[in-house]
Image 1 (tube, rainbow, N blue to C red):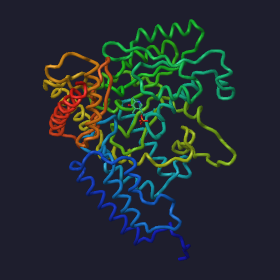
Image 2 (image 1 turned 90 degrees about the horizontal axis):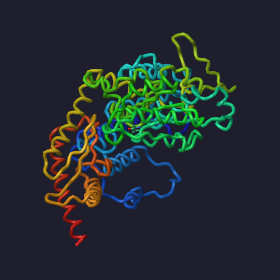
Image 3 (image 1 turned 180 degrees about the vertical axis):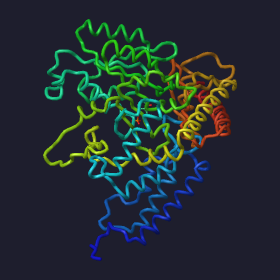
Image 4 (image 1 turned 90 degrees about the vertical axis):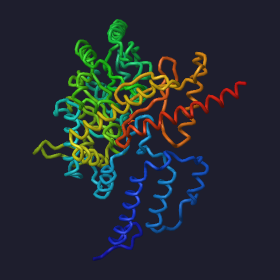
Length: 493
Ligand SMILES: *Cc1c(COP(=O)(O)O)cnc(C)c1O
């Protein structure tokens, strides 16, 4: 066989040897995660020094050394969100099958932008999307596209909403041609993607109406209605309402049914941001909470959160996928991508912002089958039970004040015994405590501000966490809380 002298190719024997070694290293890593510190205590400067070569190497280096060196760097100096005591933000422990899937996907390297370039991968992505719709309990006729994460999933839906609701010529003439201002509605607790979308798509952040929340932290529906009416009176054009299914701070799900009904009355696009919480709709006991998602014109969800997919994987679902095609399809002369109609084929570049696309569906598709509906229901339910346990233990512990618990998010704060009610001090104390806990490497949580209270926040999307971990974490928090309080007291005196 003729081959080119080529340092980037690898012989079969080399690939096997290096590959098996890497797989061994990774298997050990998965096994040892619970014993590792969650994060490195090295500064960026110290980490830079570990990288040795400051300039791009002139000549190539042997692959086996490179892979073993990269493994060492990453396995010794990373933050491990797969650790059983990792509860920060909303980043899950990644399913090991996802790591294998990414290896396989990269090896085959299909370009899932066009059907002809990714025959089987396109079908797998289509099936994944259908399964995700079934998973959350909407019609399998929803169509969509996998994207890099929640932000992109929301952006993708947002532009489709605008194409659907704005005057037909908006694609040609842009926003400037419009006599009316297009208005966006969302609750006060909506994730920051909405501001980015308003900027990105040229609306400006003043087009966003942040609707206050009620006592249960859900969007205040009568306020929403009043605001829409006011905007109509002013001559604006409302076009989209965003309902949140699991808000990022406290996990509250909006009254989706009520929002759906308002959208129907005023002919607005109903978008649900379910990036974090919507997988919980698979739990029979929680179906009620998500009532109304079946009405959504579009839904954003994030397999790299509560479906335990490795980063990155987000998904946009649209009730009528024609709206994605209307928004994103283009047919330049250099594409010969006429997908065959047999079996309803499609080209994913026409469904979203990306052109060349990786095969992120594989890891999601495999995990969905590895666990099945029942497996996912069980894991998600357990995460919720563990979060409630966290809240209960915080509630019982004298020096902790339990604040909220929804889905798998609990919030609470440290309050020293016999300390006078001084909210400013308690906020500073908890903020300092959070820093200490994050640096400490024993556990990892994040924060939420709830009605002026700086809270510690734990979000469990972690199949490795057990009750024992939570009991230990409560002890760590109290111990560090006392230490931090003492330290701050000395500084005050
Ligand atoms: C996490 C999250 C996002 C952003 O998702 P990314 O995957 O981080 O881009 C948007 N909305 C909600 C409700 C989220 O929880």
